[in-house]
Length: 416
Picture 1 (cartoon, helix red, strand yellow):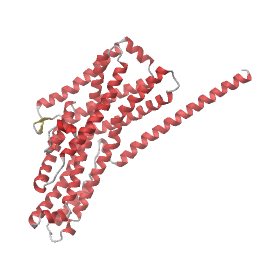
Picture 2 (cartoon, helix red, strand yellow):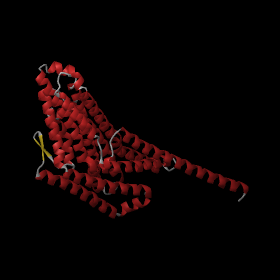
Picture 3 (cartoon, helix red, strand yellow):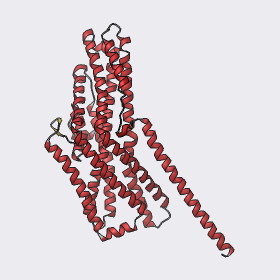
Picture 4 (cartoon, helix red, strand yellow):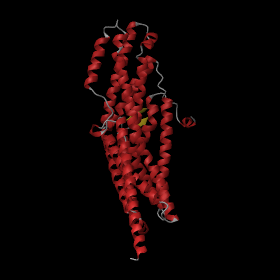
């Protein structure tokens, strides 16, 4: 892919994850930076992250207060729909709270967050050196660049186009507000994508370990019995380590992920209401108002893409990773049958199975909300039911207007 010509060929996990981690660092949503081919926490990285967050919030509300003091902006707001203004104010307040929660929680858990990458890198080094595995870092980096590039361009285009549309005499202030708003809202969105990427990385390694546990591969790759048993124990310990990493990811992202999901669900329903209301109103107004309505529809539709992508796609990645983890454990259960002559493996299998019963591993957010396909169904049903309620409300309102018009027509006909 041509876009990779601008990036160094990834050789380690840090090269692969460096792209998303440096972007997360630049917008102030983690406490560690990159030095060479490694991640490190320093006082400078901590100060930078906090400074970016404070500067973004100060510029956001500073530019907003100056804009609200302008007479022409006040007149324009007075003509705007009150419900749209209320939803916009709610979005600004909730986005700010979610951004603050994300920054604080990831700063508090910065060392644990960094530890996830170090533990995953150590596991990868063992897979490459002891098993000759090809982890295909290039493919993961290419996917991150493509997805983040497309989503970022769409999101920034939507925000900046809206700022340009309303920036009649205060273009610089509106663009500053748009930039700070993109940082404040993009931080939690991007953090959700990083969580999704970590889940995908674990899923890839679970699938690889399934291949390594197959007796055909073990007998071919490690014909010596002692070396073969050593490698089997290594694979089993890696499976357990990946399960521990799932728990560690849950601890690091619990608060920030829960706050972001609450924000995304609330704002998706509100923006869906704006979309429906604008689409119903288009065609019943003059040409200028119809053009404004179409622009509002386009802006809200584009802004809804990142939260809906997170709500519906992230639980799918998490659920698939847990499914691959269970498949690994089922393969470990069969080791006794595949290698009956290795009696020393039986205690290892029994201990892992007892640990599996005690530790029920799932990806969760705050309040122990399990991220699985059931959550996707729940979010989808909420949005669909909300849309059906809006349609029913609109039909009832339209029917009432038609009845009122018929009454007026009947009164005029009989002479009242």
